[in-house]
Image (cartoon, rainbow, N blue to C red; front, side):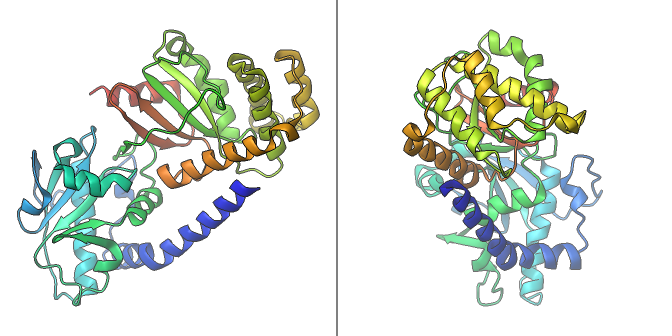
Length: 378
């Protein structure tokens, strides 16, 4: 239960961050300023008047940006400017309200590609795992006049960068982790994988690794396995994509099944057979969730029988307890700490050639997966 305790602690931390930081920002801004959350959803309507201007810069030190600049650091996918115009307005209004209009600044938006940053800034950003990273260059930001400033930003030589935890939470809160919305969330930190402990379905040298943070009792994990994976099977067969399942237990009662399936792989090292078992289990969960609840969810006896038939082993789970606990803890902490994935299914589509990935949460169709790949290849 170590990984579950970890998630419990992180959820409490999430609440603390929400109360102290995000409510300060979101509550003041979205209630007093009347900025609609719809701006951050797929069917976005935009204002015809924007108070910011936009430009793209290259080979820059953030400290050398023009005064009163709202900067957006991205990896590969150029950010949606309409959204970040609105985001810059949100921060401008927050600072104005908190300072009783003593600081009233209109920001110019600049897009900055991560690869164009100087090495010192890259080193500072080394603990950021979610992009775009946002911040402000302004001589007018006075922490004595606006007490909210040190709550929101870390100050680096006059450059104000939104704190890592707050940035991640803002993306999580606004639903940016869903592909198809107006912002693509990127990461330059690859999920851990070791074929000694984690099966890979597909070719190990595939260009794209699709990491799935999943729970066997998750209905939308089941939907992805039943509806989407068969439709991208050609991409798996030809070495375009490899599937790597990761554990993120969110449903009660499913832990023994996860522990058993990990033990099955540790004992057999038969990735394709284990994947077949997972597919069978998800088909039952899918039918139970969307067709006939009288079927029931898979129980341990059913799982054992399926494993014996497909894989030909019946491992003693206790023999692998320490390793299993380590795997579960690493998977769950990775999902939460690196990618702010709290629900299942959560995905990281990693491009092994470019060395970066896109994070998204929730069921995706085969056309969605192809669209995400295409967005990486722009």
